[in-house]
Length: 585
Image (cartoon, rainbow, N blue to C red; front, side, top):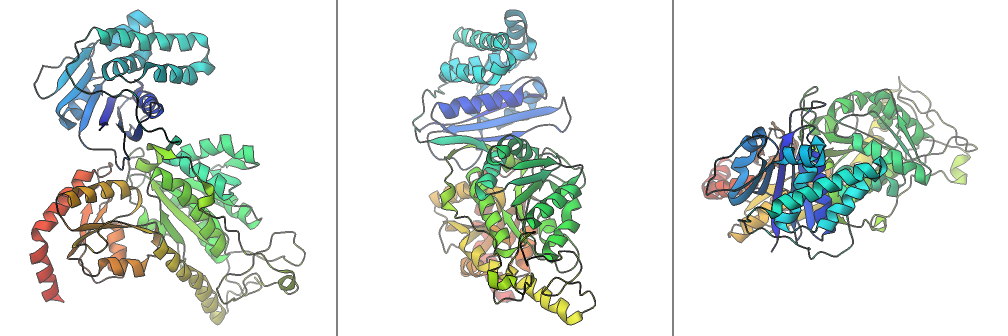
């Protein structure tokens, strides 16, 4: 079975990310399942960057743990990552930059990458392409995959640029032939021949938004969400849509609400700092019952924080951000494939219940690339907002107190369908009623009535992995799904009674399904990529259960081993712990 992890490390500006991306595409086109992770500096140029790609002939759920092949462009990369290379793994390094003492633990190949690029090719910046040739030769990755990629990548820059990069690639091939291969890693052509696409989470989300009917996107550039706007700027006009780059995030959500008021499906995407600015206008969407989809690709905070690192730190903000009683739906995307279908569901919920939906992704998921089956939009039937009937337009009440709390929403210009949509409290017609106490209670009950109906939908959008009624349960959310799923399988293989519960709607919580899963367990672990255990805190408000928090707050995602190690720790103490908890009750 093929299952190898490659990691490229070096200085920002040395082509680390492009090396990883080209390697990823070459492996995918060769017929391998791929799963990537990248982290890069916040500086415009300089600082350490690394890109990891895992390739296999079977389904991948995480970025992997131990590294099989480390490519170090400089000594800093070597020092930072050599401890992650498992015994018997491979190190390929630029021998012009530093030297490495030979050890039995790691098989090292020193290649003068800089000299080859400078002297043979004449362009120092092509050393990352030289290393691709080395990788192709060493590990039997088909050379034609790289050659076609280089032609695609550099074709628009002219034939001379293409030729230089092909020259660099073949120079790497030739120098690798002079090395005696001492490792056993071999890839060749992969066995996966099904129709798949290589997408990042942000690209998948953007495609799903188009499929859902989004035709207006407004946003302001911010790492790590900007890719969504860049992708839609190219693709949305092809289906008659419009992308508006606004002067700030407040303007962006203003455009979204205006477009939605006018009858168009609209979306914005940002990260924590930008989402903070949007919270007041999100309150307007709640009060005026305007559909809106707001994507938060989370990064490390607070303030500017670590803009290029990942975290699940905005859940409190997504759930509670705003003043007054301000219900909104909060969803968590789980995988690259789920980004497509998840954003479609977000639009459906927003349109059906005429309220904002906050969609949480993160840097780890947004920038992750993976092979996914060609998306099928028919899997998520499109839902449109309720329109007034001809009879309702005779005496139109925009905020009519219906049995299901959802009122018909007209399009401006509809005869008889005019109404006022503003932030002041209003009556059924839409007239301001800021001094009517009883009316305010009715309208608050109306807004929360819609919100509570979402809970049943939330109960239908959960995934359970492993045992349905385990002794040790794991409740996770967002981009940790695959990592947890892999950890559960590791635990099951070792005989532990383990199961994982993963909701796609985080607020309101799927209470019925959660209760069913929690009942009978001896311990529940909640892993989160934040310091305070934000989802665990939300669940404690609903369940009198002594949840075990597993928090990671270093700007990096969990690995399956970290989850598994916690399962083992809990398993050693689970019987005594459950007896103590029962006595306390």
